Amino acid sequence: MSKKYKTIHEFLETCSEDEQNHIYDIYFDMSVDELVDIIFHNLPPDEVIAEIRNYRLEVAEEAE
Image (cartoon, rainbow, N blue to C red; front, side):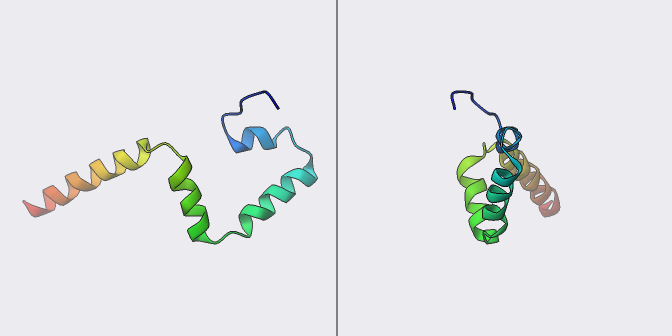
């Protein structure tokens, strides 16, 4: 598999229905904690950074 896929979804579109079901079953069987760990270890932080900036602004406004 030499092609680079941007998302898991993009890759799964190339798989058979049985293969897709196999992968979905793996993720559906995971605990929320396991899924959060995967997200935190693999996704870029841009959205979280923006969320923390907004949170800090809200907290600062409430403190005034």
